[in-house]
Image (cartoon, rainbow, N blue to C red; front, top):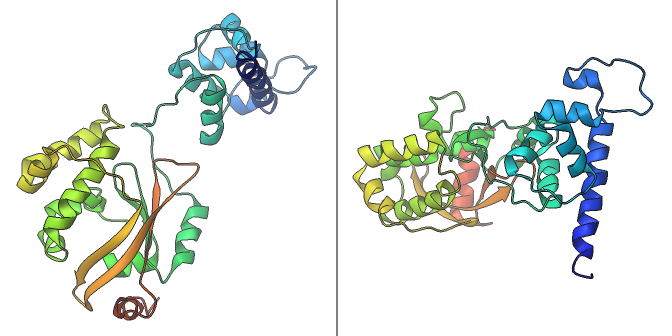
Length: 280
């Protein structure tokens, strides 16, 4: 009986959570006609079922906390019908006892105005947002000055891996044989979570076809996850420079990372970083 208690409590919380999510929405907000006057605010169960394209009886049983099998696809449909945020969607999966899929291969990645202001606040330390396929999605002025990032550039040229393996000048500016295998191992650990994402597959296929180094290191099947470290590279204006970097999670967008670079206080690299960003 004690073993069943956490499950029963979770079902009760699922009931309250679903009721509260539909109570906050009006029919007009989701494109439905209001109809006759309602006794209680929010959507009815049958309206949620209609929006989620599932049976009303089935949804009612789920909301009542009854023991039914529910698939991730159905939970995603309910989350969309109830206009849930990413955090709320994760909570829904947790209460339903399901593992939430790690990826949304077809969804767009956007950087919120708040996150852009956070990037700007890091100036004069370079900072940028990396997407799930390692695309540069946004950056502050320091990152543009130090790393020549351009948000208006062609999509391919904004991809970290593509820039590294397809741009000979960038490879020449860093310890190639050390950084290359490590980058590929990190990217493989990410790509494994997106086995059906055509854009991942296309990028990997292009790099395998055009870079013998990528092809060789990709075939080694090494994986690793690095959240912080050092970046040593050569800059045309100031010469060799070493920066610390840390990858920070974006809570509402778990596939994104904010990459922030700093220099050791009092070091020659700090002087060079200040030189590069003095005009900001």
